[in-house]
Length: 255
View 1 (spheres, rainbow, N blue to C red):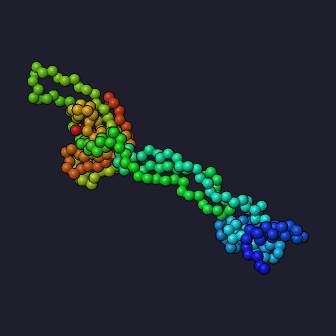
View 2 (cartoon, rainbow, N blue to C red):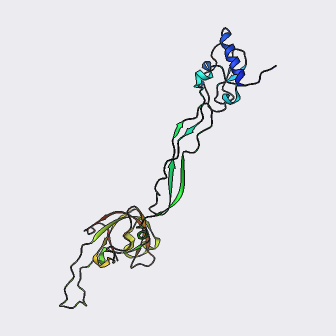
View 3 (cartoon, one colour):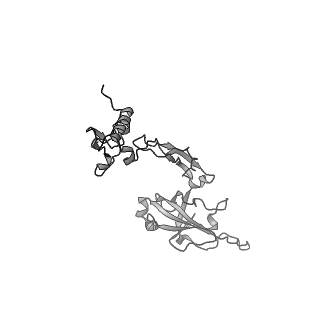
């Protein structure tokens, strides 16, 4: 009766190889690579009995490993074991559509051709709803700083007191998009993508909530439009906001 490739055959052959004089390691005699990963039919050796045996990790499944495979190739067998899923991360979008992730760790890595590890990271959609998100929907209206004038109201009555001038604040934006119309006319030609600009919020433009419309959110893309140039518009990202400040570099005004 001819024995098929099985765990019993391997056990009997290993015992025989030890008892037969001249029985020598097979995988150890191979040139590099001594052991092969996956299924590799060229990763063979010749057993002391003159039969073909294998030094690839698939030999555990096909039950035709050379007798020294375990010792030469670290032939211990283990399936991948992973830990529990961690907590979902915060939504990566402060406002609007974004995503969140969670991960898990490998506790025991797979060895000797066993099943690979399952997914270690998952992602799902989310929607950022920060209480200040309504601000990101506001569109700033801007004018160049040439409109900055400290003039008196001609209609003010002579006996009326001049209101005390409140301090302004500065918002620094990085230009992300400048519409093509802006390049065709007037002061907007100086606006360029990735340019840092300063926009000043003066007392005259402050709304009832104490700030200028469209001053944006830190690190969030918001939108602007040129107040005196129809069709000129774009987007920017707020990089800094400074109180009690007046703009010094390329500057504009909220209106």
